[in-house]
Image 1 (cartoon, one colour):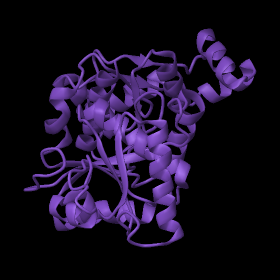
Image 2: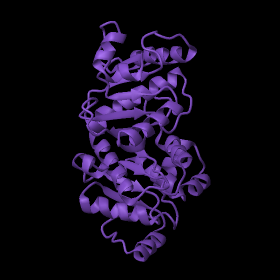
Image 3: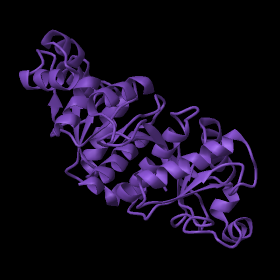
Image 4: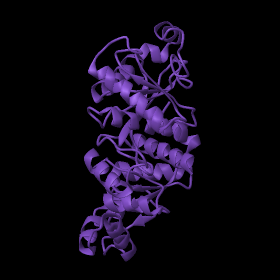
Length: 330
């Protein structure tokens, strides 16, 4: 099942998704697909002349898709808004907002778009820099992160065979505070995007003190921080992967007290990028799982990066995911 099939029903047809790479054939075709399938209301951000020329060259119909063009000069309201956010002089604001990525991010911040998808041509670092500097992080969250939606064939656990994995592409070695924020952010994502009651397992090579090591202490500390900051969510650990996913094992390893999460987790938080990245790729390869992502999270509005090798269907799928997410946050 593709992301469009999985999330298309959750998508919000009126969701305005800014696409600042409108000269890229894949982005144009994804915008056309999003419009035609009712996944969102795409907005192409960039130089109108170049976008229209690219659409003509590739035979893509972009009729009815608005183009936000600042090539003839950035409108004053954008300059003033950027100047207020970043305390920048008009000349500096003009130069920065001539870049479609930064202009698209500002549109999201100003409420003129509900989300942004970029990364087909821009780097991940570019997308994160623009998003963090203009849209900003969610209140109380110290670090952006990413998640994968894992669809595992034949698996009955998690949430009807779905699991959220985080962080699998951004933070290499998060400290306890950052790890706690990743857990809280992913819990919000599970609730807003998927409508779940999140059951968040903070993973380690130890279950409830079965091993002693500074790396175990970090995860245990992150659990305490997360529970203090977001007591409404079920965030538990530290626990091993089998304790998080297999109820009998959880009961055995946790002294018969598996809590709300042990053996029933639908969100897995990995202690570092090594484990998170390796885990999703192993599940993908060995269990033939579909891995949707990575999707960025932690920002004040829905934003996502793309792989620069993304296909048209991948981009349209991310648009559908962000559209459903924006709807869930309304």
